[in-house]
Length: 332
Image (cartoon, rainbow, N blue to C red; front, top):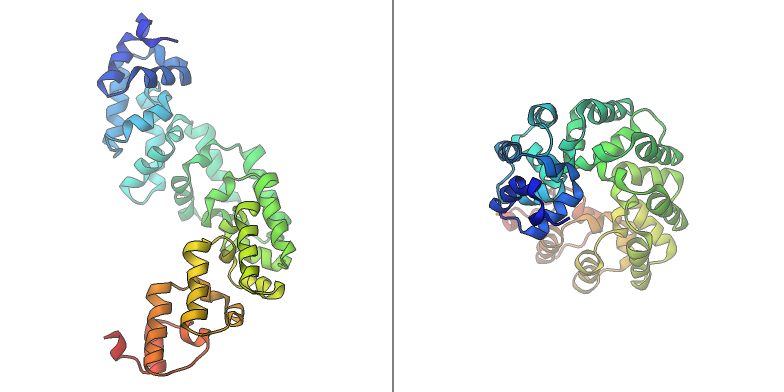
């Protein structure tokens, strides 16, 4: 539809032009939302001002409206205000609601009664702590667009197949990493769990991954997990050692090879003069910061001519490390 030639849309068209939109962008919004044609400039302006008043920055508003032009067609007091006020009760900081809307504008186009309330009830039934409910929704506002019956229930059923059936376990996983609910069981979560089994993880190990590092289940097997596995093999780790590494520190399969794994292994072998077997015996080696912990502690121990295991060197607080090796001056 050519907006410029549509007389019925002239009022809203000039509103958009005044806000800096070009004709192409306006046409795209009209295609997304047919209701926009009949929206008066006054309503659009009122809704625009309201969005600005709740903390959405002026420079972000064009992007918000472009992605969900329906926002300007909705009744302010009938739709926008009730949803924003309800979301505000879930947040702990003023900017959280505005941030959630800016990331997923469609959240305020949904109904409080038909979508938000059933969603909150669904999570509560799974044992998600009440104080975590708001954090989940505001962290991943796209949740409100998912079907409870065909999408979220499938995720819950999948997690149950991993043996996560004790009361509250699944709820804790969803609260810890709400983005897991956006992935396909068939295309992502199931293949990932099968790959983890193939490298030696037991059912209990898989449960540990899901509980502590659910993001690992969400990464692509071919592009990330298998690539990291192959890299560890090239470094000289045996199959059993890789199983120990993944079991002890699952994120090793999703960490950047270039920016995380490679620099640490190089430092371990070339600078510290240790064997990679030591890392296999202490998988948490890959968790520690290279600059702030590995390099600093190695340097201080070298100055004192102290030799110790990786766990003795790293598995303690800074204060405990100082006391253990008498290194107060090095941290002064």
